[in-house]
Length: 116
Image 1 (cartoon, rainbow, N blue to C red):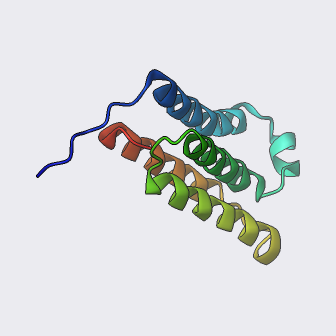
Image 2: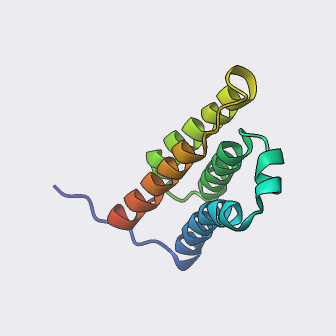
C-alpha cells in the first residue's frame, strides 16, 4: 500500500527556501567580493558556512518535528568535513568548487523531490 504524501506547512517550506537562499548568498558574496577580501579569506570558511547553514536548518526543522531529508544531513556533514580538511590537512587548498557542487546538489534534489 502506498504511503500518503504529507503536505508541507507554509512555515516548513519557508525555512527550506531561506536555507537555499543563504546557501546561494554565500556564493553571491564571493562573486561580488573584491580580490583583496578573497585573498585574505581562509579557504575553509566557505564549506564551514555551508555546513553550518545546512546542519542548522536540519536541526531547526528536526526540533519542529518536521521531516528532514537525509540529503540535508549528508551534505551538511560533507561540507563540515571539507572545512576540517581545509583547516587541518590542506590549508592552502580552496574548497569553493566542491562547496558549490554540494550546494547545487542540495538545491537540485530539493527542487525535484520537494524535500531538503
